[in-house]
Image (cartoon, rainbow, N blue to C red):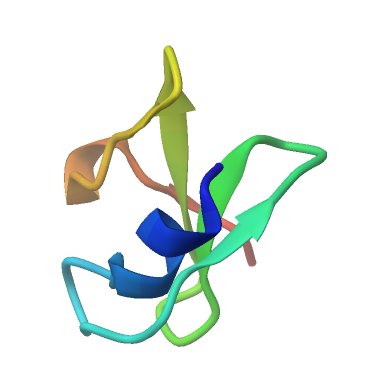
Amino acid sequence: MRYRLLSIIVCPICYSKLYFDLEQTELICNVDNLAFPMRKGIPVLLKKDARSIM
């Protein structure tokens, strides 16, 4: 994932910074403990598609 894009994307729920998990290819929100998937290289930032990482 491009660093520039990652530096401006935030969690759609709490607006905190997201971190890219290279191994799982997901964007992680540490505040809400959610992982947002990437499909065809595009982040899917929908709450209904996020999975809990607890």
